[in-house]
Image: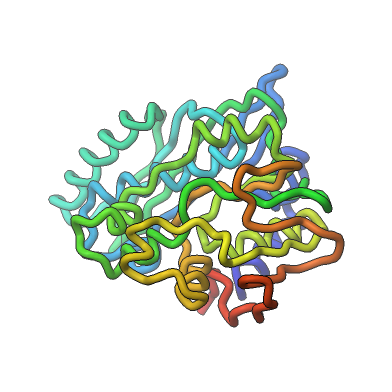
Length: 292
């Protein structure tokens, strides 16, 4: 069973409007006129991070990936609950110190959580935030919108093979959630989500949730100088960047975008071009969890 298959089953369970049909990475509650946003993400060793990654970096990433979901809803952080699997003492202590530093950096107070002992290290965090306006979510893209993205794409994927002290490696180890950008974009975006599993697979998810077709011009995907120096800017390099994941930038649809990477059209699905020529969709659009 794929992640998408399981979420489809959960849609039969989620019976509240706050769940937003499980198309977004966060729920939105109206509490006395205030919009409370709640999200939960997990990290698993060997899937989301490497066993060799420093505990402080893993702690940072746990906080950042959840805050990225809040950013995609235009929300500012309120607090967090942590779920933790106790293991090796030294690792646990280093993680706890790193998490404290990360939460302080992001202004995300720790409210509580739960701990268990396990031989498999699985980490979870639930983050809460407040949105000033109704979050755009994934499902509002409209034909005629432009497609935009914050920052650069592909750095984290390239960072897996880059020297540990490089800017590319830092993008993988310590992503920066785009909280300020999310709050600003929420005022004008018709749809928005974070790019976590890969630009292409996440754009396809936006298209599905919105009931539209999305076209991406691969030559317009923003690449950093560090990425270009490491991988180049060929079609192959751009497809790598667009499918690698772990970027935690924001993908948005709006009537106007400063540097659009594509368009929203009638129809369904995802289409790619490179310098005006159609490009077949790669077999793998990005990361998707699958059961054993």
